[in-house]
Length: 209
Ligand code: ADP
Ligand code: ZN
Image (tube, rainbow, N blue to C red; front, side, top):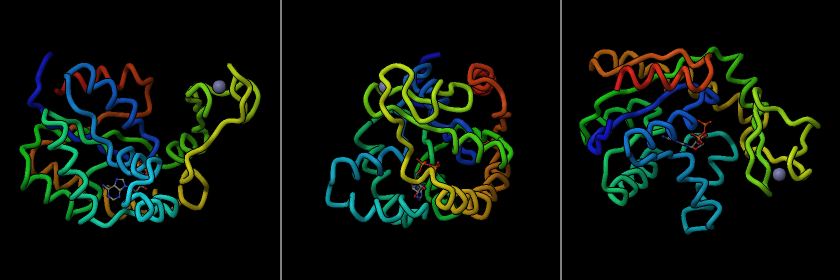
């Protein structure tokens, strides 16, 4: 199972479980998990010079300009210096072309989920700022907006509001979904049904890697 040289991407509509599956893949194959969204949120939280610019795009649910995404991604891949799973990249044709020019990508995993389910999942996504527990459609808090363990009020991602959700999904449909055909043509695309329990989704991913 150990393969430090794998280079894999995971794609799919918001809420499809990319983050959850990436963590499992990272562990099982000893890869660097590189999530562009997490990377950007880290810049924002740590108030780095670039964080302020990034925050404007993320809060609105807009894509970050390609040049900036590519620069930060390259830096992170170099810094990690090992095989990787990319989560949230590429999202448009420019990014996809850059990726295949620069790296030898073994597989692109596409997690399929209908739009209505994706929106329901995102709307249910909450986190406890105090103990870090994640809540979602499967794991709901007993009392709305309240942590089961510590009673603190639950937080949502700043961009998990109806307006930003609608924008992110529209951008996905328009710019990211068409990349399916691009990767099919390169013979590296694998589709997995994301409307199953996380362990089952992961089981199917493992069969393909
Ligand atoms: P989601 O996929 O649910 O929108 P992410 O955490 O993957 O959430 O990304 C959060 C935000 O970060 C996106 O809405 C976008 O603003 C920005 N972002 C992440 N990856 C990219 C990318 N590859 N290109 C442009 N913007 C990106
Ligand atoms: Zn808590």
